[in-house]
Amino acid sequence: MSEQLRYSDEELEEFRQIILAKLENATNLYDELCASLRNNDGNDTADTSPTFKVLEEGANVLEREATARLAERQRQFISHLKAALVRIDNKTYGICRASGKLIPKERLRAVPHATLCVEEKNNPRH
Image 1 (cartoon, helix red, strand yellow):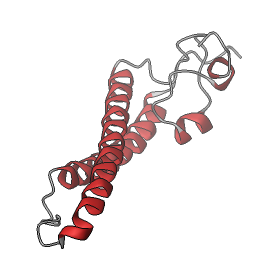
Image 2 (cartoon, rainbow, N blue to C red; image 1 turned 45 degrees about the vertical axis):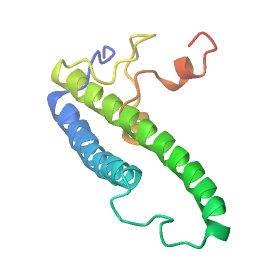
Image 3 (cartoon, helix red, strand yellow; image 1 turned 180 degrees about the vertical axis):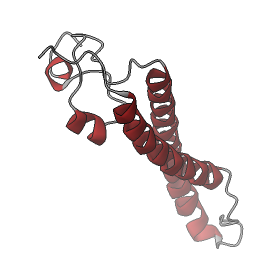
């Protein structure tokens, strides 16, 4: 039996459903993080006594920076998931970009936007 060169259309559809579910969750989280950054909830230090205002503002700045980093990571994750959907459409999904071999299904189920098999991911060249 020859080595499988790509996943079947049925297998690609299974991965598409996994990615779409992750994309929906990631987009919802991203929207929540962005709303938090816009301070839509109305929580600020306007009604705080001056003694604690400086401390709270400092903590708010740190929290906003952390939220901004999380939002950026989420945005990148969404971008990777969308790129995986394009690879599904092109029928190149699940093929290791370094070795050309199929990435195991277990890895793709865990990391659906993976473009490298574990061996290549652990290779210091990448």
